[in-house]
Length: 81
Image: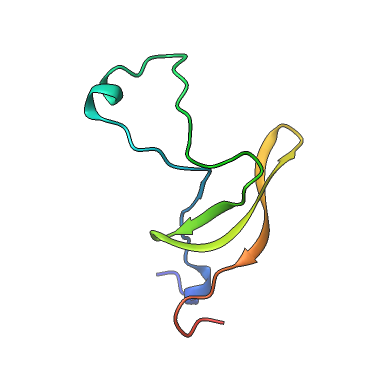
């Protein structure tokens, strides 16, 4: 059995660019090439989400040919530092 600390546990994170509400009818017509306009504005901070909670905000960056996020704000929740 491997031993380690809680800090070694892996947590999946997501970067949320924006959101949009769609009707079931609109959702059912999505096809390749469909463009869905988000409710956020280009250049606005994106949210970094872990376990369903926003933990940080930042800006999208391009590193070589991959996307990344530069953290600009850490969101403290409860008694967390």
